[in-house]
Image (cartoon, rainbow, N blue to C red):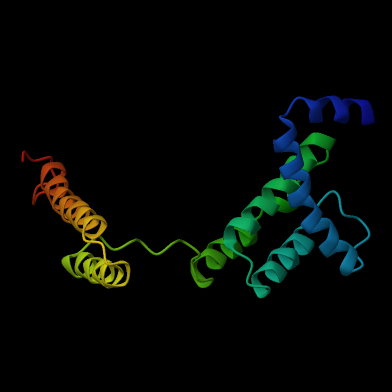
Length: 168
């Protein structure tokens, strides 16, 4: 059985296997810390407690999902049933996990505005006064102005008011 598991593990890319086992290690360390003797096959109550502990630690929902995928994948690699991961309670828990924990998505960047370009020009003007040279400031200012107007023009060309592509 160990040879078959080893062969199956080698059928996956090394990085994939390493990712699965790293995620599974979260679960194993939880079981060790809470004196759970039988790590595999996963028991529903232990898996629910594990996911709840991740939530209490403010771990992102993505990490929790990867941990569950790691547990499931290790079970499959070892030929162990993973019935503890197939429960409606776990599904509900993961849904609420995603809703309740603040999102870690990046805040969308604001587009360049005239104020931003104006601040850059003011900054470059302050550099001009310290260096005494006009040429670098003029080149940088011209570059910023062209970039700003090109950005506005690109927006006109790519989207009309109805969201369809427009022409410049």
